[in-house]
Length: 379
Image (tube, rainbow, N blue to C red):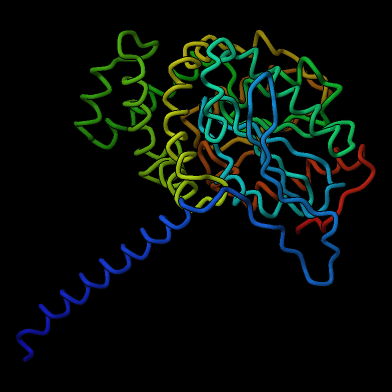
């Protein structure tokens, strides 16, 4: 009997794995079949929850229907509007998890921009798929939120691609914003792409990764011609494998994206499909425009306080370019905050530190103008 035990153990392990996989797929299937929604705000039993909000709503912005997620323990809290990266890479689902603690102190708003995620159908308005329209959309949504929550200004947070439209919006309409927070801040896109490619090639050589070296040498340094999308994806794939997107990870942001999509309560099955269509479609239209961005020239000054929250190891939007832009930009107050164990996603990679810095640095500015904020500042 003992001679058959290892085989029997392996069979039991295989059956357990199959059962667990089937169970997981079943849970995912159920989640995909459910209507879209967002979990209610859970507060201590003794706390009054009458002023909380957990709403997923469709808003008409710039002539198209776009989706917005609003969550807070108290609607009197200052508003934070988060502009996701990409272009076209919705982070509505993953951000809801990453910003859970922030909901005690801010009304946190995540928005699927036109062409992204739940707002994918807006991509059919081809004339509206340009940077200026995204800036107009940002300002229109800002005014909608200020009117809805009866506030005069909000905090604008831009990540990666979102840092372009965020910086442009705040520079043009400073009267609408308490301050600006840039994450993975773009400065000069062409310079950043050159640095990103060279770092990736250098890492491949350091690691003696012949396949990566051959692929990167074959596509050559940017700017790319011909199949520029394929070449960009190739470079980003190896950058992610070498930890330039998520620090000390070989998977880049792929795991973050998949977890957000599989278990999101805000996305239907159709929304999940549209997520990938939105990334590809938005990149096709907007990436060439993004490559022409030089905020050193177009946004040399912002008339409200500025915070850059940068992952020390970010090589997707290289941190050294962001640092150069930080020193160049003029503002009534500015601060560069480093996240030493992060790359391109410090708000996710070090979410607790991000929350603490938002509360310690940003909340006093926003609460001072709003007159109050609830919650207790974490130590």
